[in-house]
Amino acid sequence: MSNKKSYIKVQPKGTLRYHTFNGDLAGCGFIRTIWPSILLHQWKYKNFRIHSTYGMHVIGDPSFYKDMPWVKFQRSAEDHQLEYIKYIASKVKSATGTKLIYEVDDLLTPDIPKTNYAHEYYAHYWENVKNILRTVDAMTVSTESLVNVYKPYCENITVLPNHLPKFIWGEEEWKNHENKKPRILYAGSANHFNPEAPGGDFGPELIKFIMDTVERFQWVFVGGIPFELQPLCGHDIEYHPWQTITNLPTLLKSLKIDIGLAPLEDNLFNRCKSNIKMLEYSALGIPGVYSNVTPYRKAMYTCDVEEYMIDRIETLVYDVDLRKKVWETDKATVRDQLYWEDNDNLFKFVNKHLKLFGKELA
Image (cartoon, rainbow, N blue to C red):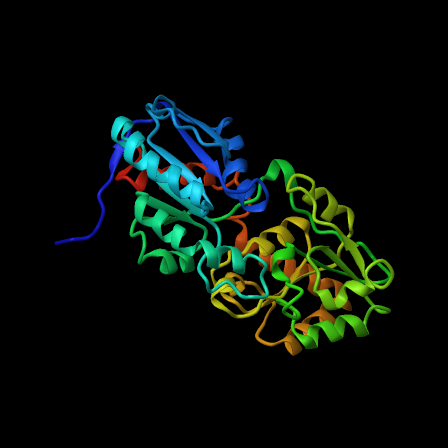
């Protein structure tokens, strides 16, 4: 007996409605649900349109879900979220036929490193997450690694890659800023660091290198920064608090960066992450230096140990032509994935949802 799925072709006419209950309205909430929702309202495939809404408050009225093929739950984990998912599964689904999809962009198991401040939260709520996964009809995740993690709890999973909104980031463009003091950027959320665990994704060798080179290089941190480096902020290290997701591209472009940095420890949590930094650095027009961890294996400059990462930084700092070559190579690698508005990525987004339930656009 073949396990291969067959899909019913859906004639492209009418309007498809769906709703997302957001667990957050920050990075993942915007990247995974809000940006595509905004763009889908302007998207049309033949005579077929999408009406996508989102919010954080429970809607218990079954009539809200009428003619809605699916409803999504992004990062739900708490007790009250589990309860309303069970309510919709038992009361709404039977009345309207609406399917339930769980959406997540990260590992939510107790395997989250203790250096990450989300560790305690999801370790506490992991049983709730497992109950939710057993209740919903399908999942959408950002990477194949996440499929492997969640498969024991939900078999019907599809990968929706992350993309950037071009209308916010603009066209990518290479620029040599000719900075007298090379500017090296780390832009990442604070959840990579925990005051009770040293370094986070920055090992001791890289932290020492940064401390030893503050006179030669201008280190720029946006959002998160290792606690060991915080005493240097404001004089030796340039620090910018995390911005809203809508303001972030403008800030990053204004910083006139030469090189982007993305160190990651090789652990299950990081192996499940997406290549979002590679997308952002490509859109910024800068080369990236990455740890040789699953999300960045296809980048030109990946490093297995911090000694190699330091060597890559030193090489790029003094070779502008090489910087441009690395950026062009990485940009070509992610070209098809880079923006929501390009490469039929919105069409693929809609079709992957339909295929979860045996349908696809004709």
